[in-house]
Amino acid sequence: SVMRLILDHLRGLWRARAYALRGIFCWLVGVGYLLTDYNGDFDLRFNLRPQQPIDPEIIVLYAEPEDWGAAGPRSNRQEALDQTDGYFWSTEGWNRMLKSLLAAQPKAIGVSYFFGAGSDFALGQQHLETLQDPRVIWAARVDSEGRALLPALARPYGLNTGVVDFRPGIDGVVRRLSSPLVHIPIFGQRLAERTRSRESSLPYGYSLHVNFRGPKGTFPTIRYRDLIEGKITAAHLKGKIVIVGSQSLANHQVLTPLGFMSRAEVLANTTDNILHSRWIRRFTVEVYALYLFAALLVVIWIILSYPQSVSTIFLGAFAIALAAVSVWWFDAFYFWIPISAPIIMIAVTFIVFLSFQLSVNEQKSWRLEQESRNMRELEQLKANFISLISHDLKTPIAKIQGITDRLLVSMQDAEQSQDLRALKQSSEELHKYIHSILQLSRVEARELKINKQAADINVLAEKAIAQIAPLARAKEIELAPDLEPLFSLEIDPVLIGEVILNLVDNAVKYTPAGGRVQVISREEGDEITVQVIDNGPGIPKDQLQRIWDKFYRVESQETGAKGSGLGLYLVRYFIELHGGRVFAESGETPGLKIGFYLPLEDVGGV
Ligand code: ADP
Image (cartoon, rainbow, N blue to C red; front, side):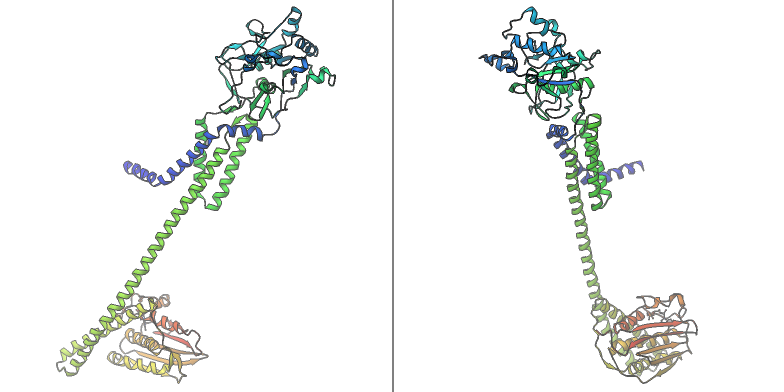
């Protein structure tokens, strides 16, 4: 049975393969989108979030070459290609500038200009005092082979330098800050060392996502020119971390998720991140793929367990919830979770699964339609068959009846004529059956035509009584007609004649020998009624309503009379076809009172 359980399980999985394959397809779409838009989704988040808090001590100071009296670019092509700022160097200019800045008592000054060796430095002792002040950090660079390019003003071991080494992604956008390959800490880390007594705690071999605090201009900026011209006082710099840079030089422009920023501004961001350890954490792609898979399971569950309208709403809510959680985690915990990939995946899953369900349903309804058409055809075939058979049976029976009648007349032998009479009765019964079945098949095939003409009900009743009379005489049953003169009615005399014959026949059939059967016709209000009353066994009250049903025969009747259970069904059908109604009463007096009412004024005509 364990084997069977496993087999059942496997079979269930096999049946669900259509869903599983579609689910995997949708997941792959989600993962594919995640991979193609990995950075786009990440960058988007910076642009969506509101103003972020910044370290209040960090300030950007823009000092352009002309501000310190640089002589303008010389024709030093090599240096230009190295993207160094050496050709803007002016010992006097920087000495003057740093002196004035240091006088304002900042915590630290970081110079984002790179004044590499090889430039024309004419330094004297009096200059070094200012230019190598322990509060000043000079930018160092890393060349393409990973060697540190120390600035000309570097002290031994590069103690007053910090590496500036932005490594952009393949799309040229700087997102990460990676540990340098050299033993000099990065620029922001140096500034942090200067301002905090503790060592900054960047792990070895780190690669961190910069938590950009906002677009260009998020950190307060001052222009050195404004200081020179006295528009602002140096007091602004007191206790600050001043990052000196340029906003006009082309090689100072860095592409970030928030657009171009100056090198000094990016350094302000990384310094802020280091001081507050607020980096963006990003899981690996595998983790996000798993996340998408979990979301997919929820989505499929929603689609499969709710009707389309409800699941549409739920899926929309689910997508919004995922996006909201993602935004919240980014803002509150600096965790990046993709938004667009899951939303695209949800949309694709929605479309794929709903269209699949639609096609499955369509197939189902098509099959149902096919089945019902087959059923209808079968029904038609059956009806045709029955009417064909009954027609063909009628002729030989009529022949048998004719022959038995003839034989009965000439028969002398008492025993043989007894047999012949039995034969005649049987063939009559058979004839009745066939007739009922034929009528039923006509009714069911809606082939029954009603031929209305003026007829006297009493005449029909007398005909029926005359037909049953021999049977009644044989059973010693008294047939007592009580027919009131009536107006003639617009009816089908054949059908109504059959109805009356059926009722009288039943009464004689089910009433024991010596009984009495009354046939009454009356005009009551605007109706005409025919009633057949016998004093036989009657019908139990609880079965009285069911005698009108097709093939119904009362249970536990001891009369032993044979029948098809079709007679009264046809009676009711024919009467209702004429717009009349049938009734049956039993219980108060012995026997059964059964009959029908027909409207005088024809209402239900066909
Ligand atoms: P059947 O061919 O069996 O007579 P009917 O539809 O004519 O079928 O009658 C349905 C059943 O109603 C009969 O089988 C019988 O049990 C009961 N029934 C009909 N008429 C009488 C009656 N006059 N007295 C007692 N029972 C009757």
